[in-house]
Length: 393
Ligand SMILES: *Cc1c(COP(=O)(O)O)cnc(C)c1O
Image 1 (cartoon, rainbow, N blue to C red):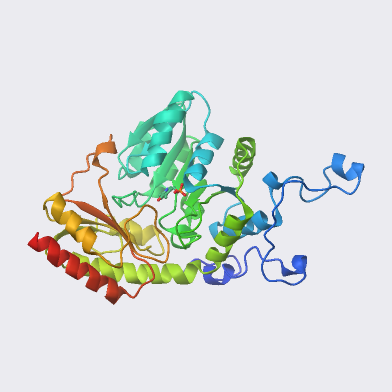
Image 2 (cartoon, rainbow, N blue to C red):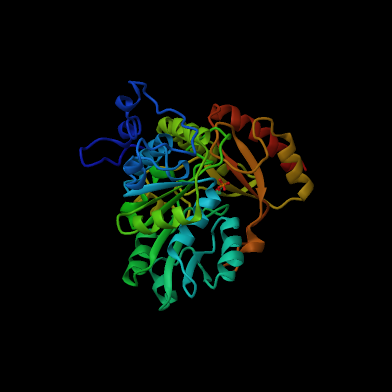
């Protein structure tokens, strides 16, 4: 499914990803940009310095290395520009601070990534910005929650840990009718599987820590914006002093070059494992929008062009000891935060206590799986022995 989104020249995203942001002529023919470690940029004359004539002025404000990644991400997202942040969470907070002011009201999906919620309840509240959490599946009915001072609507689809699919075009239409910005945490789908700006999103945010870098060795975030919101994003990002070290930028750009082939494999393997789990008696439900009987499947099929390898599993009720035994018996799935790397992960999750607008009450213990680049049959075998143990436990 990846590659179904073409640019104006009819070129697939798979083709664009191999060329975006490359300028070998500027670097003596070398294919990749140099890793520029820099603070000071020297001007040849006083006139150049005073007139800010050069392309670069200071390391924080951009280097050939950061430009290469920003240009590549802008090409993938189809936005007007991209900025980088030192983590995915920092990209979220930077985007919110760039568009919101004291006295503003924010509509935030109840299915949002936990630390994003903590930022709203902590710092945004302290700055005089009020957050209302909304039911993620309300679609165009979000219009009823809009106030005079609602300046932004935040979406994350599928939802963190719970994987609800939101009707983003409908939410965006309601937000835009009131001149509110639509911000999306698009980490799950990557720009390949959800072309956010063409679905009504003004600021598209990625924890590049996950699939973009793809090797569990980088913390980074990206934000791209449409023409209308780019000046505000660029200004806010500059005021906050955000920048990222060049080695991490370079590693992320290197990851982006192989994003299409990795995502195709994450998708294929993720679906294979999800289908296997759906057939196991110990499993009550699999939370994966690409499965036909998932409640979000129709919206996913309409708006997404693929599925990543991250999904949830609700188990039949058993003791915590049985869950622990299952997790401890896995040999190919690591237990740890984050995802999007080459290696599979499986962790226990429980978002129920942080929900405020909706109730999350699964039938039993919940797990989140990230399917890496291993052979799916080997992952299935590992899960099979773990579920046998769970049933016996
Ligand atoms: C991991 C994650 C983030 C935060 O990214 P960090 O790089 O860990 O700060 C934000 N949103 C989502 C959906 C995530 O999974």
